[in-house]
Image (tube, rainbow over all chains, first blue to last red; front, side, top):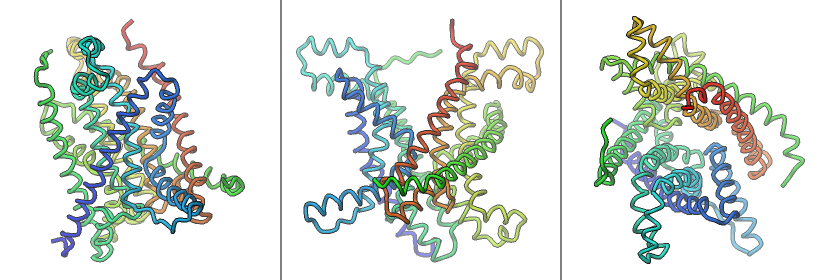
Length: 228
Length: 228
């Protein structure tokens, strides 16, 4: 049906998923760091986090991706010239993952900050009174509770992020989108192949939504449900 | 930093900003006109009305805009019937396809925003309208929609900023919007930092103007709704 390009598309889909999941890991780490910085007592940390979230959210993903890909290439090689390295080609996979992770870290910062604030402060105080260290308070008390509040925002941003991976094809990663373009060019049936790409993305987003619904039910265990 | 090259290419960026703004305004106008009847249908009790609309928004929101754009611009050209049709002069133009893809995309999101705002309407307002003997059409026109527009404004302002960022994808189908200009400046002069940071500043400027406009609109139309 896909003129023998089915396997190639499947490999591309796996690569797209790998980009999305690696970027998610980076975005979550950056988001956690950003949220802690925004809530910290240090004015410098708060200002840095505010600049990060404002600047990233005001600029299109594609522009940031091109900036990191081309600019990063130039920066690395300017540094390499001074240190006497050979010419380094930036891998589109690394550039894509870093850029998407960096962009969505800003969105996750806001989600996680909101979730932190939604946990009643008495919980952390009580844990401190029991002699928990600050890391233990975060890991054992505030973390599990804030996850429940963060879940809707996290699932929204994950859906936006998995769709944003399509633009990695612009910087030359042979992901699902660019493999479909190759197949479309070779067979002159672009509609068929882009429709297939749309179907794969729809499957990814639908499965994610099911997964998040299950997770939301699990994390809501023990929460009283009020019917209006 | 190479200031002279950037100074010389400022007219190009000004032209790119005009293209970006045209894309944005055309897409928002067309998308808004499409979203309004869809949101009304989506909010009717009959499954024959809301289910098709739900399917439309589900598919559009579940697939990347880049895929939708490629389906329109490259995909449709696959069919002889399309190339022979009266619509072909439009469908082969990248500008028209970009606006159409953006409009369809924002129509789906705006439809969901409006639907949410309609659903959040206090039941008493609808009951009062019915008690006054208003028909369903009059209730929608006089009671439901004016109130829903106000409630939807904050979410819609987010959608407009996201749409601005989405217009950057038009550069992938050869349009010379802000991102397209930046890509050209980068490929001619090989100055990635200057080219893309200037583009980022252009988007930042438009975003700031949009945000200020929506803040003023919220003061005018949303604040009167708040509890006093």
